[in-house]
Length: 138
Image (cartoon, rainbow, N blue to C red):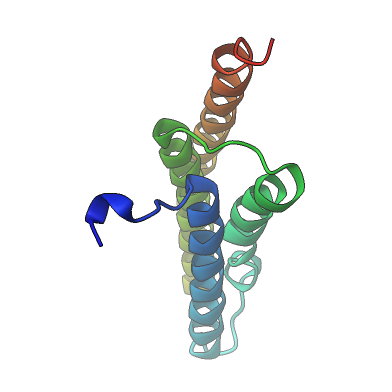
């Protein structure tokens, strides 16, 4: 069988399963970190797994199972996933700092940039869907 004959996975299904793995990793990581946190818990660390679960799995699941839409462009996929990663890392760092009993003014940067990347990924996908593929369906 030739390498050209192998069917490529869509970015949407790739993102869905990747975010499922990221959610599982974050859940296990936060459970272990909270266990060794000497009784100190953080909201951000406890619910760390929700970032990739809600922003990733649910987002890709809606496109994959409900709408069955066309594949995302590589740019949209990468920018959206980078936004989810930035928000997840921001929550992770906030949780670590809360457990350590300190704070940082730079954590807000993760939220701002993560939100901008999420928005840019969605807007670029919608632009492709409506303006590039929209002419083909008329």
